[in-house]
Length: 236
Length: 236
Image 1: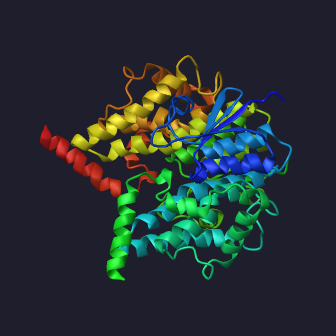
Image 2: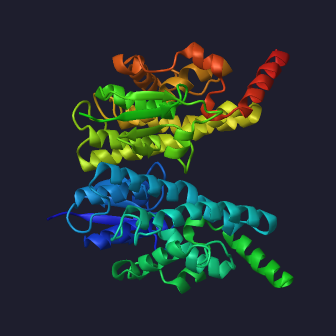
């Protein structure tokens, strides 16, 4: 009551969308400010002086940054609807472990496959596949990572479930996260993106493809993608 | 009561010592198993199959790994003595933010200065100094990062307060974290390592220097240190 909640985000950033996912799942009202990542607002720089990045959540004037930190803050502050972390300390530790694994291991490894070609691509693919196998094993027998409803790990892995699996792989012709190789993880990803709340809260595929490289990867990728397309046409 | 608590650690690892710091501050009894990092025990590999690293805390048969995840687990499970995280959700978010900053930014940047020489060292030093300035600013006016008593951020920054500031800088002749440049952070580091509990729970300096490179940095550093020493002798 009387809470003022502002989110400074970027529509194409999975980190930013993580926070929107959580707020929407909990049914929390907030005011959204779209940042131009090539010309960040003075407010964003004021709220996140250390990293100068989206997302920044500002609650009654107080800023919280780093998406995983924000997700925990949201869950602790609005305990009611749709818990994002489990209550049990051990289960909570497991959720934190897997979210960290997604953030620190899987996302960098998958991102590498976007950059690389030829032998390097095969190497990077092998590493990414190894990490996805760990997730494939972990999700086996469960609907979501935390059980029956969407939680911290699922939200943290939105890049895998949506950005990477769909638009990125298709546009770039990658074959890393495939349905054949990862049936359980594929099913999880479908359940996640088809969730009635999440579904309303993901950037449209066409808009993402048109805007590649996604803002969070930086503009220097434009040249790379162009050369990749050119060389695949020449080679193909 | 009836709790069985085992810690698989390595005496020279700041990550491992973080967990010991927290358990000792809270006065929790545990059984300690020293791991040989060049020949890890089957139990460690069983408890941490994903990362295969120390520390691993095993509570009544259930493993928790990743030092920051373990610290939060300890604080949630043994709420009584010496809270490690603040209770207020906003203060808690701030503690998590700074612990993450230390882990993901400061430690890699400081570690780089250990590896590099000449112009590269000057570049790496400049980056590390920039990050330490952020901490210098944050600690200004406070005894510890969380206030009057040692908390999550202080424990997470034990590498900066002890390993790096003392043994590493001295043995390698580095001039990154100096008292002149960082008076507040230096005072904080002294208060931290002189705390009556922490003080009993840090690896002896001579033992660390004799064992350089620290186990967590890998054996390939041995050759580097030898060449560094050789070239500095040649260079006069």
